[in-house]
Image 1: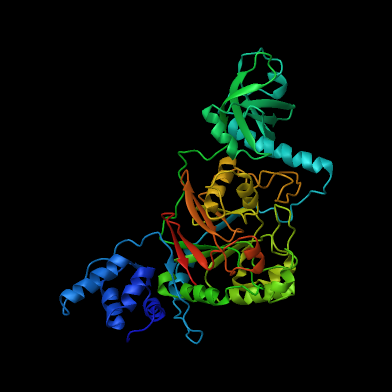
Image 2 (image 1 turned 90 degrees about the vertical axis):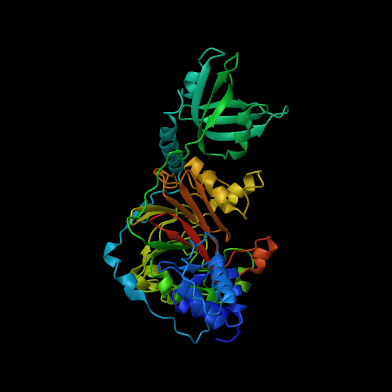
Length: 508
């Protein structure tokens, strides 16, 4: 292989079942004989290595420079948890098919879905439906807080003597600043409303920034002398226990986490999708047995102003037909689970039921499991909370910190985990459907929390729960440019189910 661009190096490594860091590819492509350099790097790699790192390649090249006859056999270091860039092979190349290795483990797989509310929607929009969903939310989340404080109902607080120690578990009804710079927070329970004052010079005041309307919290403190207000000493969120110990798989197996495919858009990254699908057929991806898609399969119609001018496919059903064709590029022996998003042809109000039978029949490739938004899917014993993520817009808009932004969506996800609810505020940017029960509460702590929607890549961890916002497969549209959204395109976080480590692969 003569001196050629990095794409040739990537293709050669992929055909041999290896990935490489971006800088490693650059080093190989810049060698005097890239073909020989690839041969030496592959020969020196450990048998179980899937990715060649910069240190691997540099060691091989340095050894060759010292002695052209030397052959290194140093084991490759553990691949870093950093994005790996893959370049799509030419369209005429047929990727090697190694699906047999994946198929051999099919009997070891397990998929369980919890929280699918499809077909269980009972809300009619009547006043009582709203009462029911908020009462259910309060009961669920208050139960997680009552063991942490010696709480009293609002009606009992009103009759306690001034100066008493007291605590309340309530839903945030109002948040406002006083003329003195303090914070007045109204909490509501099933008995009434009681005000809490958070003094600006107390450490607890830092937590006011994290408060959202309609979330359930606990506050402990001291009643004023006249007993009409509670001075806050501590604020408690339902939270994930700090000692939470996530489950892991008992075998080496991986899941690809993606979202926001947006087929039908003129900016759909078709070449990058093909590169991703081709990679799934290589030996490097044999352990990737699951594909979890967190919503927005298609671009949809009429979602935002002027969208019709940015559509490549104008009929919604044709969009799903085309998406189904792209889904066929994925190896047929992978398990696929998908939920809808706000661009999909389901109701906008959350929780969103899964696709109807007509759309299911269109997307019948691979017998994908289709469930509601949100849902929890447990694969090989690891629970993954799938939520498309519309409420992230609300959290990012309302939070004053520079850390909670679109560039770091995992920080907004962390706040939702603290509140044990995927969409607390009602009546804002997130449309919520009144139901008999609150399907958006996080009753059971997941091992992994996976969202999409904001088209940004974000990976983090909170109390041992892995957080992943998986980017998108749509280049920047004119509308996104107008609202200053710069998407992270063609990113596929790969989750090791036996360790919960996450490696981000990039295909554009």
